[in-house]
Amino acid sequence: MIRIILADDHPVVRDGVKVLLSLESDMIVVGEADDAPATIQSVASHQPDVLLLDLKMPGFEELDLIARVLKASRKTRILVYSGIQSEATIVAALRAGASGYCLKSGSPEELVRGIRELAVGRTFLGSALHSVCRKPVGSAVEDPFDSLTDRELATLRLASVGLSNTEIAKQMQISPRTVEHHRASVMQKLSLRSHSHLVLYAMRRGMIHMDEGEASSAFRD
Image (cartoon, rainbow, N blue to C red):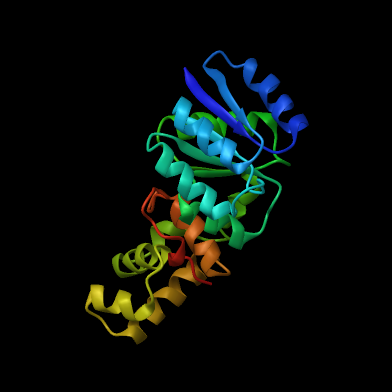
């Protein structure tokens, strides 16, 4: 049974989600919270498998709340459930320790799927973010990821966790200029428009995991 806490300052949202989850035989809502302090207290008391978290909760800044939740329960995985579609916000939340991000504009089925993914240890991004990983229309390569060289793969992984070109160069024992070339090639091959896209792509490919201990300062754009 997947034990869930709902944290949202809008009762209508909590009630609607609770009704939705009550229809799932493998899920149970063990607690609710309408502000940040109550969220932390509920997580500490119930130690749920998944916290369904609205980012804009009264009491703390959103990234601070995520960090405090992870301290209150190391076993709890956080699925952000928000209407905010900003790339910067999404990546920052994942960097802070959330394991998934699902938009409130998504389908009920998507929310349920996201909870199940987190419960078994995987990460999850809602379908509205899938465009980050789609191949370019008309590409001759079935999956552009397969076209990356070993050096490009290494650059992608290191860049996605926030390392600068200089830091990557030091680890790979190559010049920063060469790193810059590899990074530009990765962005072109994968049709990524920004560092935010690069991070989200690496997450969806399972190359990085947004666990406790990964600093939000690693996010750069």
